[in-house]
Length: 212
Image (cartoon, rainbow, N blue to C red; front, side, top):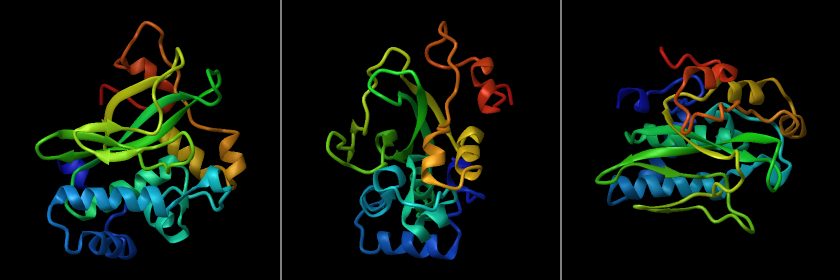
């Protein structure tokens, strides 16, 4: 579990502000599961989704998401992972590939989290923020994410990542406005014969060596 508890450049749970917020959310909690739920609901409800609110600046690092109170789904997942790790709860990053419109193309990645909970194991949660038609919740063992997989080339990507994908970091750090990110949303190319993603060639566009 060591990688999923680590403080890193983008998931900086050791930043004083993030650590203080994590401690405040954990205060008086009866269990680690309750701490995880509090962290999830804080990020879901109190951090604005950048596109929903047309809220700049573009954020990526967890401490910046907390400071500015805004982030795309990816950035919100970085903050949630940082808060969970700061409380000693293993947390990972997960992705879905979703149609940007009703059926696609185009497609883009959607960022969410997995948290390790006893006795359930890895449990996925989606703190992107609720709105009409989106009702993500923390209700283990039931998984209630923001978006179902519907369109033909949409996917639940099975990997549990300790660090953000490089294509996600690039999208959030190379563009200075919410609109610019929306016009350059990160994606990965799928090989049609591979379900779920397992071949290193699938991830070439993401800059990931699956053999590493």
